[in-house]
Length: 222
Image (cartoon, rainbow, N blue to C red; front, top):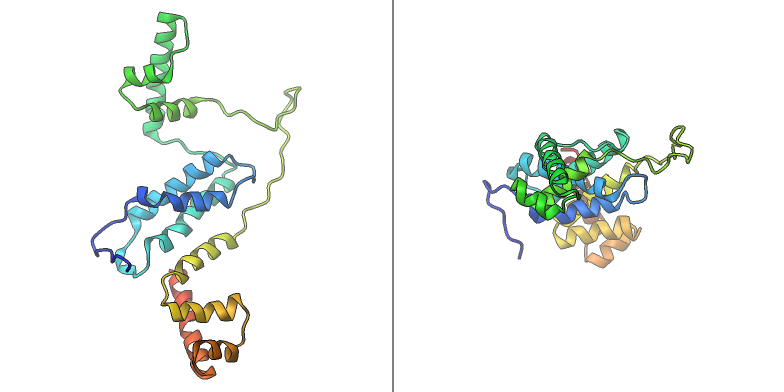
């Protein structure tokens, strides 16, 4: 039995990180590192969690997937640029100062654990901060250093978001309604064949199908 979410209960983003992996995996090997795809997806997940209205009558995952995909697509439109938050930039500058001081004291590049101890931040945050302050290195630069060779990257398929959102919406339907649509649009059965499998008449299938398509269209366009 599905657990009903309380009207005033906001979803926890950390409980839905699997959605980010699902969306980011769709864009692997398209010219942007997976870590950047996942980071952009996480931003979308947080936005979705903050803006989600439980009165919509849809599951959070149904609402969140298009938002997550939107942030990932924005990454492609921006040329793969990852926007670093202000707090991370501030931590990055702090860590750099501590790192430079420790190098002067010891003559060696300090480990992340020591930087975390001196700054009071976690090792994970220190790693992110060091990455944020590192210069971007082009993997497509020629050996002579005379510029960058751009590799053409196909634009993400716009239908991916629609398919994922539709899949989420289908999972919210009653089993009989879901089977009706699967017979009609996944198995390409006629209304007569679908009616025979579901113990309905062709007229009943036709009417129910129209109602379901209208419902899905309204929910997906919200």
